[in-house]
Length: 225
Image (cartoon, rainbow, N blue to C red; front, side, top):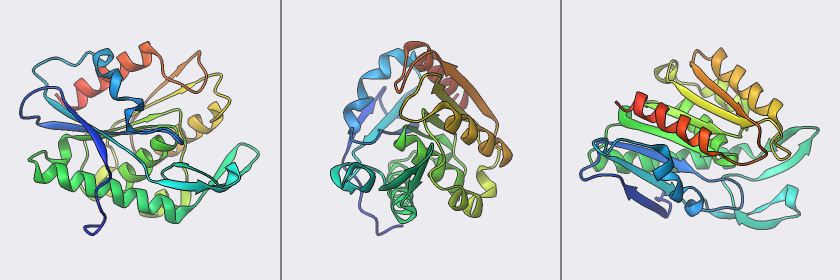
């Protein structure tokens, strides 16, 4: 993992000399700027200096989209009813990319136990995958409108150190892109590993809303206090 190059990213510090960090991963076809504007809505106190890292996923062809090239954390091979069949090797590569970002934050003086992994949709799938399998204790995981991309990968690689790491997970009740049942399944799978999940659902489609962002802010204040 140490040989994995750092992804380009937008970095925003909410205060001088941040002592905590959030790595926030975008969804399929978006980029790191997708969530960079939500920070004021999180309502974090000024004394909590946090470095937000919004990485840009690499460009790659997406098989289920007729090979169209877009930013993605892994290839989606095909849909089967509601399930998304992910390229497991691509998931592993993105896990390694997250590990490289965590290592850089460590070098910058931010301990792993003060880092939250967050993501929306496909980015949330990587937040789950990287967070639940990471070998050092994390502060928390935020998984929005998402799912487990590979249950076998996570279950076989889940690290006892992050069993019990708190998770905030949320989903739109009318989500036509990632059906609600997938989000609820991921919640149950995560709880089965021993992780407490704060589960929220909202009357929305495949998006985020202000009450959700406010709840994320409260979660961050709690785990990074």
